Length: 284
Image 1 (cartoon, rainbow, N blue to C red):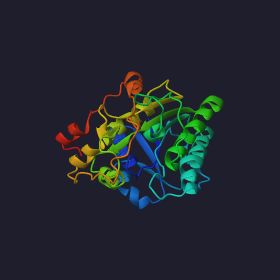
Image 2: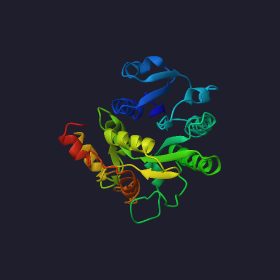
Image 3: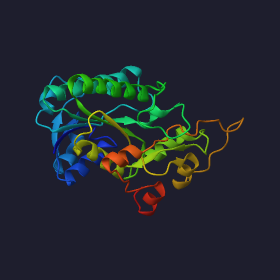
Image 4: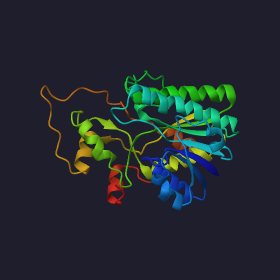
């Protein structure tokens, strides 16, 4: 399969592109800086230089691919509302329309488990749950993109497949260490779904290559949610110190995903079913 991939130099994309190439797929990537993509080009990726937000040649860039795998996003703290809207929502719709115009209907979109924050159920979040609109800009723009893409599926035949990714770690990614300062005041018993990069790679490729799943949304995560305290322990960080007044209350199901659907429909099986397996196999 020939894929067109965005976000190829980011945390997820820079792992997925080599994975797809090793599996025998042809990969074309859109990057703003060709220098950052030199290693991927050496591995066999076709590089197209361009900007996802301001690009009048998206249709031609996509033409000839069999699937678009859209990973690019703005999610870092401090990103303005306008930037998040432009990249996460507006550019997604523009790319999807370019794919339709080029005759490339298969479209894989990476969303986030953060859409399950404040979900009013006493169990892990499921793909068909009615979601409370998120307050944070990143999940809010991701959810809006999901809705826009599903509208294109219904109205114009976009063969969209949506993956709601968990907290992603592994493969020499400092994501855990980068996130711990933000988690310092979280209740240490709070759990969240996580997933190793290699399992996210597997899920992305399954979503791109499996026929007959247009319009479907899939949660991606390993088998065992991890407590915040465990993330501090595994990375050798000091234990959290309770703030004055004690630890805050929390919804125990917040950011925990049910992965039954992806296992049943796509035969997804995590290579690393828990962070402890990844640690023991030296895959952190």
